[in-house]
Length: 395
Image 1: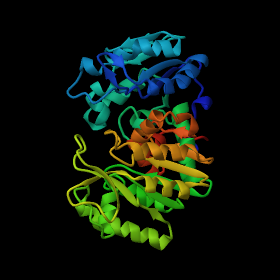
Image 2: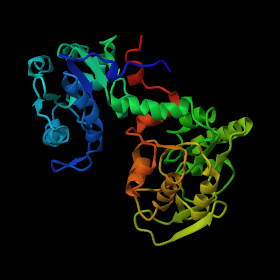
Image 3: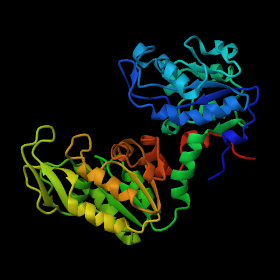
Image 4: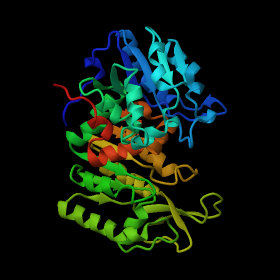
């Protein structure tokens, strides 16, 4: 990949630095439930302050519909952000083009939720938005990996408005180094574990990984479409009937390339996810007609553990069971434990996989926990993202 300009290389002394950050944190009753994404932004923001720049922060929060909504206002995070930064954070919810004089040395300026602007998610709706943002900043930093798969105004058009002064912040740089590094130059053997409920959201990723990994390990709801493709009965389990042929083709392609695709050998099945009266562990050829698969079984965990032993590089994206409904999180948590004991580089690819690792208190055992969800998936598939491509190249 072409090397992109980084924050360390960007001249920012005396400059207004537009920083696209990711403050899309869960908030309930005005209280921040998880401040991970705020903490991840601190290093880049402090660096701009230390180098004499004036940070102007741009972020979204949630998915507001139809203009301003107090429930999605970024004003809710100001005090918490001030504590994390140890610096004054000024909040501005007026017309963007009037914000420039409010950026002051030694202080941070936070703009209101950028998704209150109709031109953010659909740049064609308001081509003037990028000009308004550009009018208040002298250079640009993208530190919002989790949103970099979107060609939104603050991600792509704004970066392109600074052809020689659009840089990657520390968080984005870390994602490029770890996730991108695995895809471009992994130590071998390199294994990928892919879970989640639907094969439709993962087909592109699986095809892309077939050309890079030494083996694929599959779990989650999408496994049942693969089991159908192999001729097994799956009871009432979730599946995508229309994609059975695609799953079969993928298995054939992997076989031709001599890349093993490891499926579970046993599964946890139940009659009702929310209020189970029957929970059984069965082999994949004995799923009862009236039950559905909800987790991988202990024999699968043991088998996957043995096969993963000796891995030099691993990436995991997607839970291996109905993780949000204990006790059907046991397989996912067990896989997290298996990966924590691997001596090679282990990257956890965002979303529920990171949540599982954190719940098991194993985050410190992993090389990298990605902040992306959809962005990580798209990165795995395409090996780049629109938000990365839009940044300036190192001359």
